[in-house]
Length: 346
Ligand code: GTP
Ligand code: MG
Picture 1 (tube, rainbow, N blue to C red):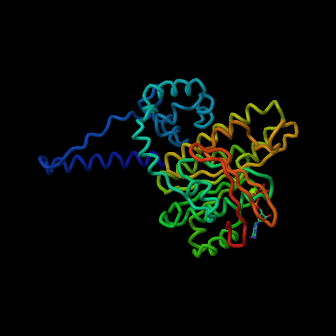
Picture 2 (cartoon, helix red, strand yellow):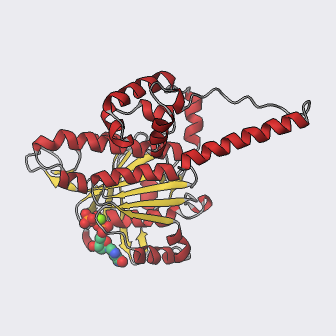
């Protein structure tokens, strides 16, 4: 319905343009709209199918071009054969893009913002803070502080950019029912912020299973068109996937789904210049021949999709050690921090 309304408004705008054109013919500069193909240009897509596609959130060619026939059929309630035909058409019409010059990339990188963690040591480890346009994975055993970091960064992201925040809205996908608004209030007060204003900008959804978790990302993407989404937290990324896809036989399917989920999160981070923070549990691999036998869930898929990986360990006296395990442009290193009543501190 919403899409239909938009279309009507578009047509109205066109009419208004025509009128002004008639009135001041020689002064009006006519902006020629780029000839962008619309859904109706796709083979086999009539108004009803176009409506179904729009309702399912597919309103541009690229979004359709990158789907598999079965996934599109599922999402938009179409037949698989029709979906395959639509995807083939979208691939021809979509502006695939892909290559950017080094300078264009540098310009995109110059927009990267850095979010403070409220710990100088952790910020230094991250070269000045947690970067946008990236996925940061925080992993570690239970009680190591993953959820606390998530809460702290959520609070800090609502702060203005000039104060180390991201100056935007935060979306928190809670899979384990461990989001606590009271804790947000405490941390907000710890930063001298008004808890009510901070809570107003943190939007929380409980994900009931992995499919729901993935749908919530679609929902955030839709909202990102109108709202300044600056941070997305998925706490935890893997718990539902781990519980639902048990055993070797389901491993491939689990990894495939996780991969898709992470790709969508990365796309969101890039398009919205946002930080995506995901938490992850660890499992013990007693057969590991060397090094730490504690490994994050999700293996290479999660490892490769994450731009930064922070491994948390508990230490003496309530201290926590964070180790930057993987980063494209920073050295490996460690930072020590505390979880206090007011939040994360040195
Ligand atoms: P799992 O989700 O179980 O895997 O653990 P996690 O890594 O998310 O742990 P979490 O971030 O929930 O850390 C819990 C720990 O943070 C507690 O054991 C406390 O040590 C500390 N903590 C949590 N809340 C407070 C608080 O209000 N004050 C203080 N001082 N410490 C707190
Ligand atoms: Mg937790």
